Image 1 (cartoon, one colour):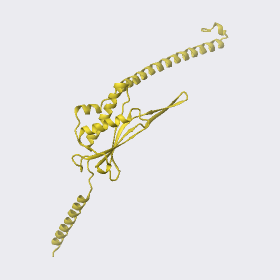
Image 2: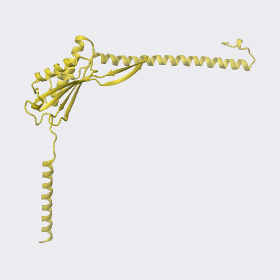
Image 3: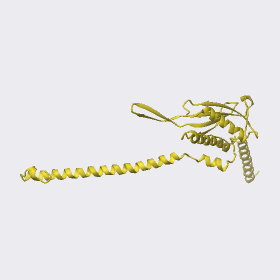
Image 4: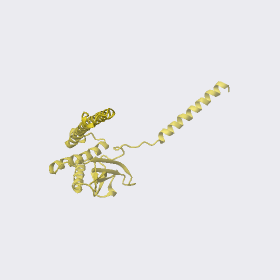
Length: 237
């Protein structure tokens, strides 16, 4: 067998080995399923519920509203037993403390309430996804109820996005709707900055004027003393 033939055979064998290894690697490389993959058309879900004691609104009503919205959607079939379910939806009302301040001997905390759903694998109890919708606790009575309703709708909308379902125009609009007081607070902060800057500028100018007068008087007093002129006869004495 001549040298050229041996080289061709070796090259062909190496190519076959590389192609085989690549095929094996591609066939064994795991791919993570998307949220809507590997699920029945209408998966069974079981819900459970937890609430933070700091949550500022009626947590039971919020849970009932979200549960009813999931039923109305129809994407999932809600079941009573975790043994019958494909997914577990753990609904929670959370209110973590995000700021602490002290004033006049007291300590005050600020919470940031939110609706949260954690989707669990019922077999391993491993959390697959966690979705959060902030709650705007704004106003009273009907105003407050409207903002709470928007937060509940936003939570379900985020679940829909995870499941690959397009949102309606109203659902999309609700996701970016915020209370007017956020805008008003921003304007107040900006206005306060300008007012503060103006006041600070005025105080600086006043102190500079006072310092200028004091320096002028000190110079005059030094001149009078050097020339034996009584201070009472000096200008400004």
